Length: 266
Image (cartoon, rainbow, N blue to C red; front, side, top):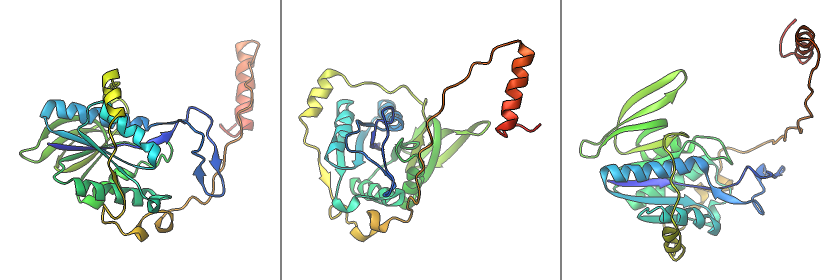
């Protein structure tokens, strides 16, 4: 079985987030980059799938030189091979263009049975790249997956559980498939020191637009079909207030405040 996992480097949003308001983008310079947290679950699911069904794992990412760090982390966790898709033409790509680059890379890898992705990235939070990727490849799209029940590579079938509102949905689909997983599907492991040292010495292979047989006019900001037209940073939250007094008095004060804020009606 050949498994691909798509991973992305994102800014650590636990730190202060700064925006380029006119461009509608994050100011990534100076922000601490990390592996997209949702992609850690996708990577772990790829590792678990290989352990259960055998095969090989290829990790891919799209990004600048610094994005090689997420691939080295994947190598430290024993994925078989990695590729970084990078080209000046890719800069400013929206979700569809990003999916187009990833789809081209997956086609170049060839004979892929299953692709794992995180549900969404913490910088864009769109949650649509996996579905777009499946559409471009013409493969089964399986989103919000909370458990992979069974994979039958010989029969080209996969059975998963999907988290839906109010419960769980069991779905059987044909392989190849693109599977986007949610938080909690597994417990991501950490690389050991030996793995980290080995990965640090590996030269990361790169694929540009020409390598992927991509038309540069179809990717990047110029080809983006969506555009951020406005960003509004919410005002800082004011200090809270502790209400004191008898319980009936506190309830009346709290009710009046909620009515004033139009949270409830009188």
